[in-house]
Length: 416
Image (cartoon, rainbow, N blue to C red; front, side, top):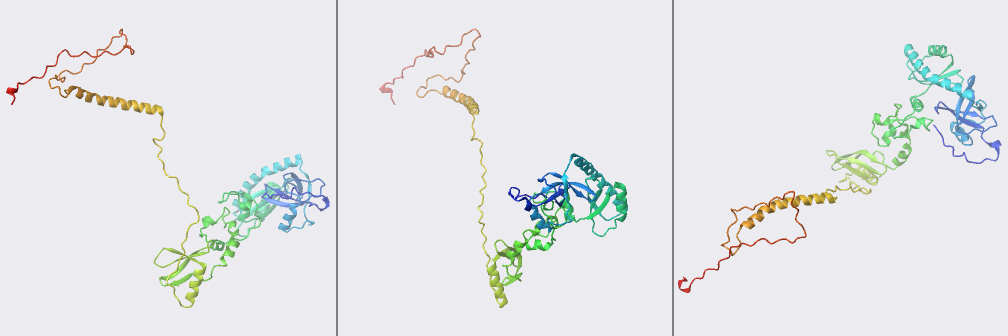
């Protein structure tokens, strides 16, 4: 319910022409009224002031002051020179604020007690809010009722129960939603709780003009009525619909009767569907007018000549899945992998080496076979033996003492 004062920094040299009216809000902005500033001291937005009340005084917060109040007066249709306008008494003192806080603490208890009394009297009404004046002499009860309610007995009980002057004020469901407040489906604070003051009637015709589905759950607000925002863009849609042809719900073609299903106001297209098919055909406004003129002359065209719709929006390329397994290498893991491969390779190469050693060398058929003598393991060194010196040259293995026999010579007489 706050209004931005965009004239707050505007300098004025003549104090006589300055606006002497202020806007004061009560009960956290749920109610606002205009008061005349007869005091010589200026008041700024956010200050607590004591104003005239019903046979007493009340405490409120300054919501607007200065030249912007004249714009608000013109908007609400209130005269600046109205003689019945109440006055601002003074800036609120500590005593005024303490008394105001004490009476504000009674509002919750009064609300619960009033609802219990209404239930006992079987009255068809709902109390939404109770506002007690700062001096505790008057209490305003805001209620909602569909039909006329006789609450004379209720007023007598409330006056004797709370010892105050009782005022009953009927409000609608939209005003109640504005007093309670909340967050709408758009994610922002409710319009009726922030800036909307005059509530216009809303019907389902506004939803039909905007090609919205008639779903009461989606079109209804927190107050249970149709959303006020349905009227915000209605004038724009009505201006755009003036270019569309009237009485074009059906078109005659050789395939059958084309039925209109929707209108795309932003693209100036009209969508039709043919019988025995679910395919939708978008037509331009000029084509619809042409077919309508042909049908008026009893001429049936062959086809609808639908428009091919191409999306001008750039399609975002989705990133493909990339397998990064194996792209990241660690040296420690590579070393361990090499050791495993080397150990496996050594074990597999040992039997191959044994087979190579057991086979006789080519050209030496007389060399004895070593299959019967398996290779012996080297003797284990004792703890006292020294380890071999790596710098000492390796000794050659002893050669076999067996000498090779020369090849046998055959005399030429005995040759075959």
